[in-house]
Length: 258
Image 1 (cartoon, rainbow, N blue to C red):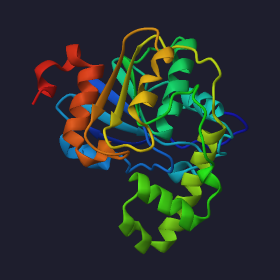
Image 2: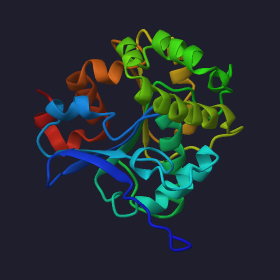
Image 3: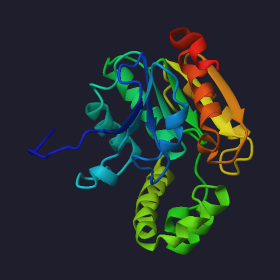
């Protein structure tokens, strides 16, 4: 903390076990909020805590300066999360959150903090693949149509004009960060890297998911689940089961098999 600024806690939502044996730290999609993973609440197994990470300049942390790059965002988060990255845990990032989670994992390793059991990335291009298109430059209606086409927002959101205007600004900010982000030669992470995607995702296809392989120095796998870009929220039980199987099977054993 610098300059006497007051920082809001980085964990903006927690649910599941109050005394967890395993923590899943989640970084949401562009424009994500504290409620991004709320649909998972009924599906969390015994012994697991799901904790949503809030980003500076957004939501409950709106009063804080918004970092200008994905790398600066990860620099900020590694300091904010020092008390939360205690073993055992995994990092899960969906879409834009996958890029942040990758950079955050690298910084956790470089800082000598307890490493995650796995980095779980979802529905995203890898850091070294260029992003085509400039959707952040669309007007609100054009951006909303694009989001509806990829399954990023429900069509009924159009009814909530005031919230929609705020949401579009936040989504556009995050998409602009993603558009500027590219690493020519990604440094591999040393924990297991597990990549997930939706079978009907038009934004992150199977070949892009496979292209994460150079980012892995340890175990690597790709898992495709039914659904589109928003597949994690369509079937929370299936998604959480797959994530926890990939990240913590020795710790949770048969409790996540149901």
